[in-house]
Amino acid sequence: MPREKFGTLTEPMFYILLCLREECCGTDIMGKVSDITGERVKVGPGTLYNLLEQFQKGGLICEMRSEGRRKNYIMTPRGQQTLEHEFERICQQAEDYKRLTGEEKA
Amino acid sequence: MMETRKKFYMFSEFNFREIEQELNQMEHEGWHLKSQGEFFWTFEKGEPDMYQYSTSYLPDSSEYSPEEDERREQLNGYCESAGWEKIAAVGKCNIYRNSELSAVPIETDEAERLNVINRLMEKGSLLWKKIFVVIEIVCIPILIAAAAVRGELLDAVFIRLVFYLLTFTSVNVAIIINYRSWYRASVKAVEAGLLSVDASAAGKRHMLFDYLECIPVIVFMVGEFMVPDPEKKMAIALYFLIVIMTGLHALWIRKALRYAKFSIAWNVIVTSVLSIALGIWCAVVLTGILMSRGILHAPW
Image 1: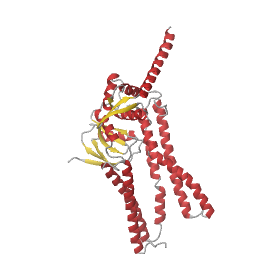
Image 2: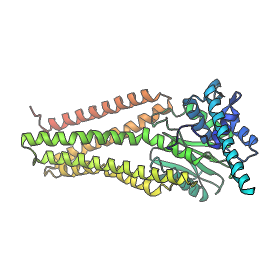
Image 3: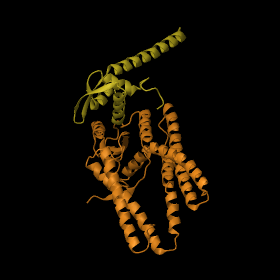
Image 4: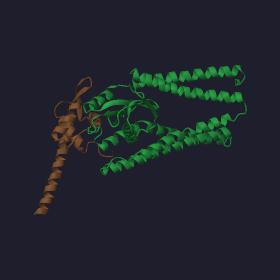
């Protein structure tokens, strides 16, 4: 897709990175995202695989341990920075919404 | 004994939705996918609507990748944990099924799915088409200039050669434009919150253009077959048979090496060397027989 890579994160990207603040196995991420969001956001296994691969290539996460099929990942400082940047962007959106709708109500 | 049925399918790589629709339709008729061969897909008779099928792609894999490599194993592991059982895998495409009809889909992000499809196309078949187009565009003016210098512009062999090159170039350009049009339309659709555009028509055009690449070969065969001598006709048919057998032989070797877990590089090397060696050996033996019978004559 012609968008700046990880300039903005999609919801699945955001929640996958959020799960990887602590070391986590790929297969557990799907369940964690579902739990965190109260099943509002679901990440399919194919989407998860490709996003983890891209995050790893982009230096946002790194592989910690590997036991057969089970691979554990954790977010890197660069991933943390990307996540924080996305959080600030979302907050800014919320602030803009509050300010504009607040003005309208007043 | 379980009733089975084989079906011939040729899908273009980016036409994932038609693969899924076809498999789900077969399932609806009570035919469960059992395995996927180079040309024929095998189905087993059973209860209808027991499974739903889905595809997932590994853009960095190829037709030469080991049947079960680390990346595929990892993807299979994620899919299994979500209830998706791997049924078949050829090249970059993996096919899964799930008995839970309300299971979380394998691909939940359409933009990401489109991104993967585009990566596999750009790194795979489309890359080769682009390389061929560049080579052909460079070669055609050089050939024309060389023929003009030698005064052979109206020579039959030269005209045929230019015809082959122009046909290949046009077909390759058409394949690239066809895919890019589908991709651009899909990007727009996904950005508007829709699914990627149905690739059935673009996929069929892609396959048709691929077949059109055979036209120069067919024209060449028909042209050569016009010779009046029946023994020479037989000789041409035998050479053609060698080409087909070499191609099939390459497919079999490639498949065997994939199951033997050869790496991509070793699979490419061994398949190429063995297939070329077999082709050359058969051609040399055939030429020897034809020369001993006086059908062919040495140029010296």
